[in-house]
Length: 303
Image 1 (tube, rainbow, N blue to C red):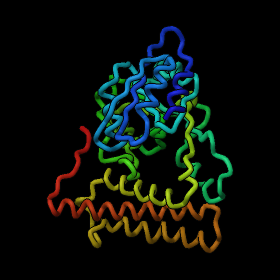
Image 2: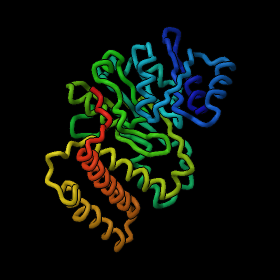
Image 3: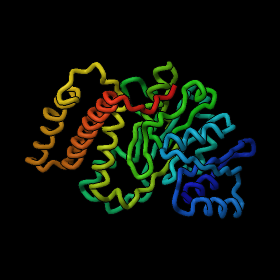
Image 4: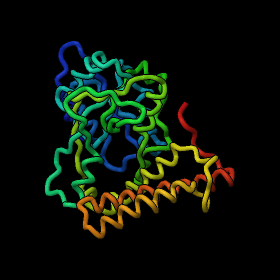
């Protein structure tokens, strides 16, 4: 977290750019408050606002930051990321240049060293992102921006709505898809999501990400998030789960995994993760169905 703030402090902004930095503490158990105080006391160059959000979850924390912000543009970054020195200086020009409601750019790991052979294919798609050196419009059926590197026009954000609090990490419970869900809403409203190659952030590869168990948990959680975004109430069910989810697991994911085992394919672990993701979708589909049947209340989607 301190490295994230230090990267913001090192930003080149120019004489006319006004910046406020909002840090949302989502029930941390470390010395976050003390770190923020120490950084502010050292002479942080921008207004640094420290807030607490008691409801656990990435989306709750981001929504708290949105409510507290006053700027024309809202820029998000995670506590394990850094921004390039010219990031903030380029944001306004990027919005003007693209006409986008939502912007983002490349994300690269800055400490990815001695990567195990099984992990390299996974990292190409998780935790980092690069769509090339040209501005790119992201359409309904195309790619999406990485959640740690998102920026919105404030006026557009008020129309788009908040992050979906059903999705994303909740404390130690992994999750995701809140970043894709909000981009889907932007596009559904006829607004533009764009990738800009000059808006660069850098991601810290945490030690736990060198362990296979972490990635299995993460992909299972992603699968659950995908189901939460989908209405399966009218689907044809088998054992309380939409039949097409079982079909995809057996005919695609398990088949690809079996072929990978036989050929010792370099993407073997990535194929294992595809199975875990599908199992997460199946688990959440059955759990959600049981919740509907018992009449227990569920969290609401954002308006």
